[in-house]
Length: 184
Picture 1: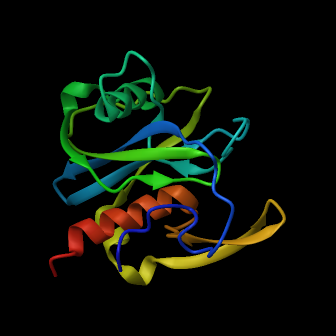
Picture 2: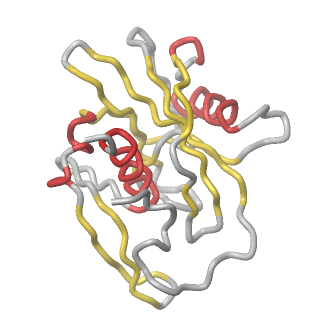
């Protein structure tokens, strides 16, 4: 399956935003002795948008950011305390556009163990890791739906235990899956 590209990929003809706000996320792949994991966050329940959802560390591009990788690394340090010195940036995967008007550049980074997380309590309720193999196994990919803005919207979901990973995060993980398995 080709890259997902956006929240709109599963929903046919929908009205697209006129403009997109630029953002970047870090897709942190942690090299653990037992295998590679993906570091994720759970947003606090009182966030103004996407409250309680599972996400990669990331956010809007700022004027002082040199590029998307700089944005992703800055945001990861601000949100979860992941210092740049532990991250080897591998590069971006496909851009992802959201129904909320963001164009997100996911930056994949290989993270060396030895880092300590320090969640920003205003934004992050929890920091956790999921084995990369969970996301590479298509049996864990599903399409769910819910009503949003008066219309049923379909989206990817990749639940892990009691964690419901869905929407843009699952879409970007679907794109990562495609990038890592395309040669098979």
